[in-house]
Length: 141
Image (cartoon, rainbow, N blue to C red; front, side):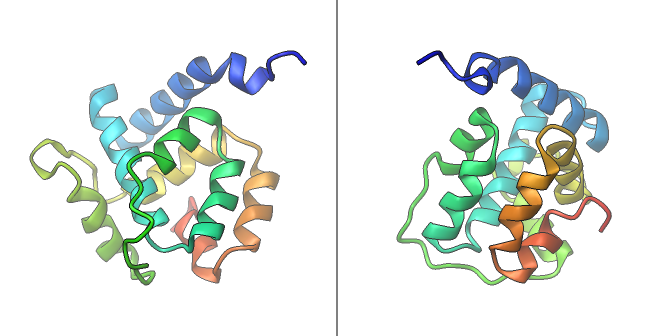
């Protein structure tokens, strides 16, 4: 079997996603953007059961999938979905002294994600998750 195209181009696709997330958020560097993206993915992951999280991860592009599952403590208690401002503060608490995620971080990452993957696939997966998952990944909230 040949190597799937999404694997062959994973690095280029991730760099394009990072550039989109950086530009959407107004951040200055790839490192700042990476921290924001990692924080958003972790905040979302904490609100899902393991089965739900893996369903979501399988829809992500390869590098984002790896970031989503990296350093995952599956024994951590599941967090409830909260208002966007509360979850944004949680995003901003990751590496707090080096985190420049704006108050629009979740929306910014959602916009970049939707622009860099098949939205129909994302929407189909979100429909199988708790109702709040679609709100979380709304690019217009």
